[in-house]
Length: 425
Image (cartoon, rainbow, N blue to C red; front, side, top):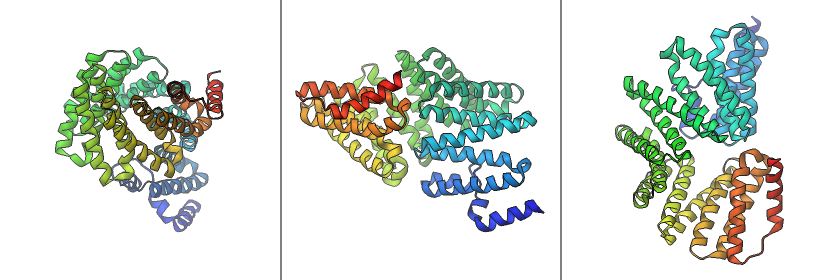
């Protein structure tokens, strides 16, 4: 009776939260809100779901702790998507802690939940530059899923492939490219077999693993194999986008961006430019229809296209694309600075390099100085995550200022350098 009364009270007070739980499934209402880019509303519902389930778990922990953990995990994912990294990590940690406690009494039931939650935790730790802890969690997730997949391959091979992908990325973050490549290859192998059996379900996941494999091969300078896989990646995405453009055009644009980079590495500049142009064209259409979802990706493709054009000494067109990317990123960063200040810093850096190549040295200095200002706040908040980008920007600032004959602004430079140095100690 006490439990029923608790139910009635929280449902009456917050009916929307009570009925909108945070299970990640195609039919979940909150998930659909996110897909429709009503992200703020989706986040509010996710917070409500956690609050409701926390009250229920306090009254009946045996019945509701697992649901609280699930809601915390999915709230963390949504916060991370919105660039609210610290809060995302706190919720992800709490979710893992609850699942670990539950698994002490019922390991068979909760092992899959632990594997899922620590896989997500690893990604969030990586976003905050906590790379060693991220790697430890990614390794544990793979170990659990490998054990589960041995007994029930139909149920857990897809999750094993997902965790292998994540582990490969975490290894790459820490400069362990050979081991990263081994895991990326295994992820592709698993997903290729799954896609052969059930292409409608698993081809999109094979695409993601191929993308990761291409990056890992590129890290090791294995350009021919990287290019071969990048071409396969594009071919699959074209087929998917032809049959279902609403679902897969974004995948195709991503694959074209990656292929352009791999072609550029192999000195196939004209073909690289062709693919970069197509990626921009697709993402421009997507962003016109759904700006909240795709403007950030249009900016990324514009940056990539600007770089390709610059390599071919097409300076004016390169600069036009770089400027458009900066304009987009400024709007995004104004609305959500925590999520997009670093994107703005990258775009400003590319714009500065284009200006510098066009002999517009003073404008280039202004752009790279603005990039330093843009990276300053995220660097102060999360130095481990943004020190690498900040170092790159500092180097370009010094070089461009030297070429322009402009004295360095030490008031701008020294605070950034002090954070970088402290993070390296």
